[in-house]
Length: 126
Image (cartoon, rainbow, N blue to C red; front, side, top):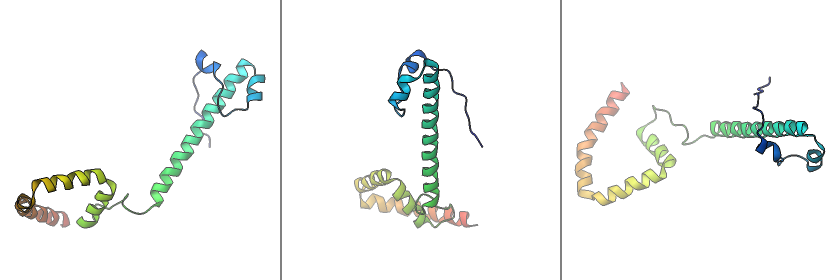
């Protein structure tokens, strides 16, 4: 199976530069047409390396358990823990805001919000 993608012709500026991954002796002996082919080969190799790296990263993310994947049916505590692991800056900002609000207002708001949270959890469980 090949995933060959046609490459556009090289501009004059691109044709003048030597690709970094090629042998210097081979590059110097090549005709301009061969140099153009060598550049296309180097570009294709770079694309293939980037694609392989993306696949490896994707595979690693799929295989590693943890906070990357939390099911929507998971308990609230597990989802909250996963959120804290995935978004530490947002958690720190929320913590700072809670400290700035103060315990009295926080308890007052929690008394109002808690029945809503319980009601939403009960609806979700049905």
